[in-house]
Image 1 (cartoon, rainbow, N blue to C red):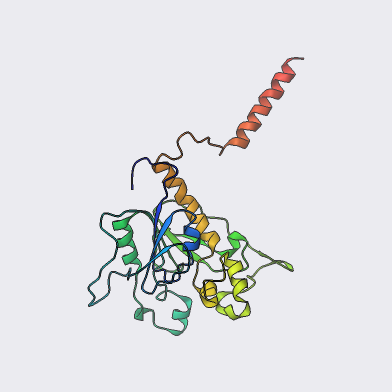
Image 2: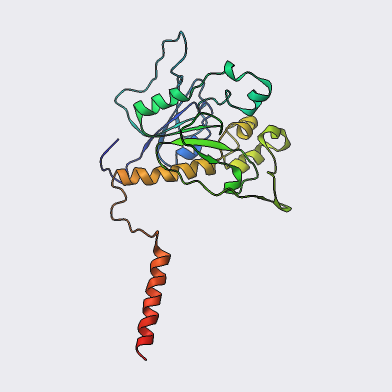
Length: 258
């Protein structure tokens, strides 16, 4: 969706491989969300559509229920990570699981101006930014990788978490031990509402909301630049340096008077 537009016009966001669609709770802060899943739940303000976003399904007459002339400003994809998950490598056969990442890329190319494809760090993503709980002060590790069509800043890797007992080298808990904490605890740790979602999904499957905000802020900057929404906006990125320079000049003028 190119060209200039009003700053009040709402972006359109496609959210795929998202039955629960927990992340849509965050994405709706950035635009109108259409969510596609094979068994979508009506869990938040996004529009759920029942469909399979995996194109390469053998012996299946594939159909994606989005008109060819519809373009989304952003596509967010969560192809199934079973093929590269730690649990599969420990007690399963990675070859028994399909690679759905190419399907996500094909959909992104056809329907989306920009895209995000999320998966585990060992998945074959293109130049991903890797985020974990340490970067956002969360009491969980939960490392995830994000392939994006725009630049996302890589936050620094903090060495310690902050717990009730002070700093600690390890996370307070892991999604492998999701039963250690309550549903409300997991919702709080990942910054979501607890009511619409099962505990196991909150602990093991959904992406922490701070990760989504971090990625979407980077996209929003590009979106506003491309559509001219940022025209006339004052750039404060060098504000501190400019103010220091002004103070030094003012001090020098004062000394010249003597």
